[in-house]
Image 1 (spheres, rainbow, N blue to C red):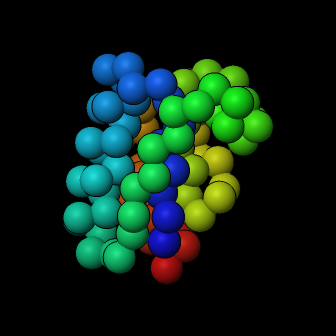
Image 2: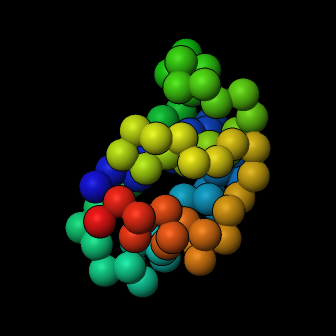
Image 3: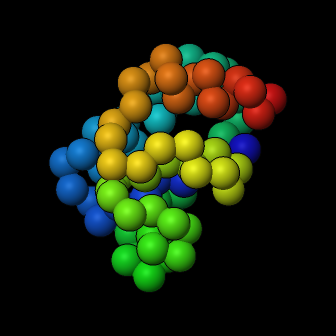
Length: 79
């Protein structure tokens, strides 16, 4: 499983990455986090507000920091 964190490295992007790591840990899945920081790639993915989160190529959120429990639901729906 691949979790994509879209953002330029701001505090919100770092908070989203931290929540994603915790969700992966609590879900017990084998997943990697990929940070996408290039604006071209962020816009190409359809992200108009950072931070953004994708699970296996499917954009799940933009412009906010979803809580760990919400990210876990997205991860578990892909198992």
